Length: 351
Image 1: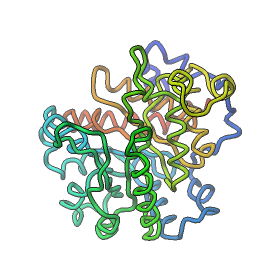
Image 2 (image 1 turned 135 degrees about the vertical axis):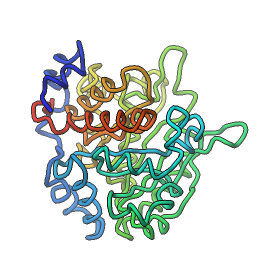
Image 3 (image 1 turned 45 degrees about the horizontal axis):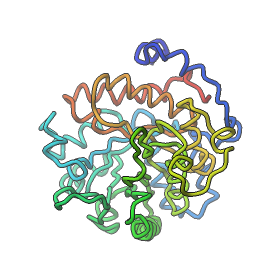
Image 4 (image 1 turned 120 degrees about the horizontal axis):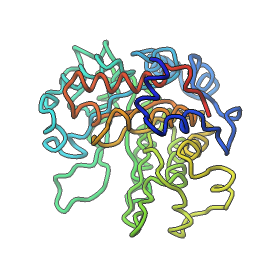
């Protein structure tokens, strides 16, 4: 994909996003994605041979094969946001086979979804695209609604149907997060023992994180610390929302912080905010994939912008679901391909 097309998708902010020079931690200090990623990052680690093979199969699939970057289709919204609300814009995705087809036709590295979706088509597709089974979820049928992640499936079930990786969410900041930390840490250890890679959704959940003027659920300092905790419990890849602001620790007056976190390690620029997330992932040793966010107006432009910010910050890719599956399949494929084109474009460089 030509740089001119990416500039067109980005619109008026193209020049500023594509020419920004990082004002914080320089790129030379980062571990940057590349074709030899598994060898460089995981060969010296404690990951066993089967995990290395699973990671390599993940990085060697789809349009981004052998680049060190990832494009993943996640569809667990049938549980996380209710199936009716999630699939009403495009009811064909009530059929789980179409979820897998979208990931394959869209050139993704993997499909990340629930045990039920993958189990229903595993024998037909597990050898055609890497499976990533999300094993915990926040179900929305209990009343009143609560925000907790509950184990829906076992690591053994993922292993038995040929998954190369498992995924989980921890709601950092919630009263349930300490229990979730223990559950997920144990599950990730078992997944590694069985030879599967691990991906952690490092999300924040606490009503106190949202003030009258600012939602700090997407603050760089808070999400960066969530990423750091995710890396600590054995995640091979962390998923995080793109940061929208900073200063959560300062404003909410909790945790530990120093002024250098905001002056030397970050700035208000979106690429610098995302760079702060990357450096908290062990200076990039644990790859950062940012989420694509909800579907809305100008999804294509928003997805491309997120990909540019992630790549230029030192991230590893995008995991985009609703922007893709809440459209006709061909439009979803085009959006996924546009994201991938950013990572394939050599002119979009590390800031």
